[in-house]
Image 1 (cartoon, each protein chain N blue to C red):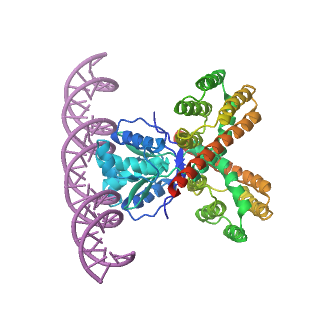
Image 2: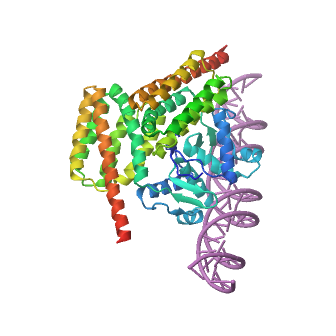
Image 3: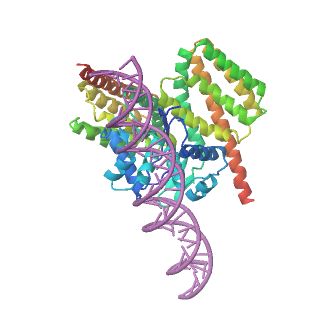
Length: 236
Length: 236
DNA sequence: AAGTATAACTTTTCGTACATTATTTCAAGA
DNA sequence: TCTTGAAATAATGTACGAAAAGTTATACTT
């Protein structure tokens, strides 16, 4: 059996301090930011050298990343970066679809006035930014959703969601946002806030369903364009 | 931040061969089977000794398990077994609820005659066994569901589901199955097969929703009884 | 002479041993 | 009883040897 790696029980962010943890963060960041490209070999001694440490911390970091599914390890052949291709993104996005309504429902039922105010604050910041800084937009968008789900009693669900969100977010920053999509994001967020204020669970879930499906479809479409372009370049 | 550990991108089972992999399997098994109890400290040198190997393979196995969320690691304090308590089980079960209908839908739409025959074979074996062997029943029940989801195109979703299933399965074998629940399992499985044969996606999803919610509630209830009993023993 | 197979060599992973540093334990004293 | 500190214990990081995989070069066949 080969390790094509699905997605598992995420470890929550924990206090670092050890060299192993920081190298874990570094490699993880490099994978998600795209600095390390798909299928790149992760040689232990090389990583140890570039990060000014010895091999053991690197080996442990790679094992942890394997547990999370971001790194693929074949016995005696070492670690490679899990390719975040269209298929993988689609799969990750669809898992998100299944979890978000569940997470949202609890928020609508339990949201305080402060929670909603926080949402509106983030939303106004998103609108003010107006997509001028993609990385910042992705971050704010992440905050918008995280604000709603963070206090959910189900830490497992939240963890799965967040990990998937990070993967999607990592590629969102690398693809363009279509103009039409920009407007849709604004109106969808507003509709969501309105439904939450009205304590209308059904309406909120409906809006969210639309929102995340559109968002996911958009990412997959853009990725399809990028992959087609890449293959065209190879052939031409 | 502490690592209370949600659930992440699961690594698929891969070909072993290395000592690290086999020790990973061993520890994982001991956690899920209950041989290692909740919060038990996992001392590296101790595990190395009992498994006849050195410390590095153990350390790497623990890191991988941390990535999967089965082990909690605190800097400079080492690894502990993640407690699989009622809360955790409930959370894991609820994540399952969100994913199973999604996985099932695809199966109903694409199932071949052989697939359905396989389901019926497993079902008849379950009925023949009639709950006389709990471990075997859990295994068959797992097979019943896995048969439906295994060929789903979304490997990420399948991986998340399977990992959660393994956690639930590990405790199912440790709790009693109520008589009423036994009959319900049989009839629910039969109804599910009927709906699949009729290509009725909606009916299948409805039956499944009922089935997994009942199953989850049953596990949580039994666990509540067990925990209450344990705390009573402590007090009394 | 070109292509393939094989052998020598290099690189990398994997397991072992050890040094260092942090934590836990436990006993002595306030 | 609580605090303090020293010894024991365990985690983290470094170094190295053995085994496997990958690479290059050489010999052999067609």
